[in-house]
Image 1 (tube, rainbow, N blue to C red):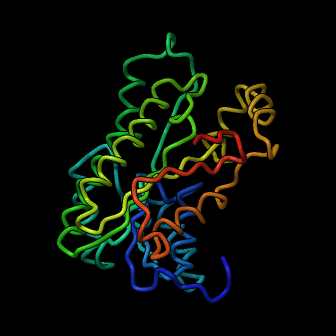
Image 2 (image 1 turned 180 degrees about the vertical axis):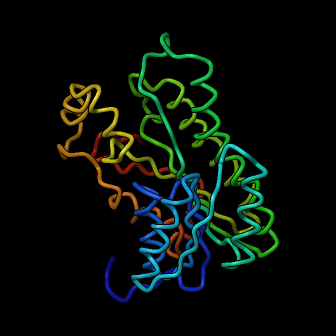
Length: 256
């Protein structure tokens, strides 16, 4: 981030799955740009450490436990954030999970978990924050989808379906909420160096080699690579952008 930029001063942001990885990078960037950031994650202890790290850097942050698969948990989390940190002006739907395996080998239990975290979690968190945004006359919602949701991905059939669903849901929500000055946009990462990906690669190292061959920039994304795009969509610079989808993937996909 360039020195002196404070595009988000006075804004409150709720970032799901923010304890580590991409979510932590996004939360850090938003805080650096002046936002008050709620570090929302089911891993409460890790979220607390992330919030402590941000506070030690002079940034404003609050750790909160959130199970995105539960609407009650999402509603309670938003109420707590608004009570302790202020209004939620920015929602970043980042929480996600996947298990790499061919669809014919997967089970309904895995489908349910993937759908609950990756898709229903977005629905729950949007449902929890939108009424407040409508009452205040504006807000920004940025959801993390995936290039898997744009072009598919081997071994990620249900995950890809969920991520595609996020794109369609966000475009529809953008139309419904434009009159309320609520912007809804989507960021699609390509393969990114996170704990989840590293775990998969340890089991299937040849998959990583294939991924790298398909990326024109010949490297995995880093969590920080995504944070700038999210900060843009969350900022006043994107006030006239809604229903948009951007891939941050080193050129892996170049969808029109």
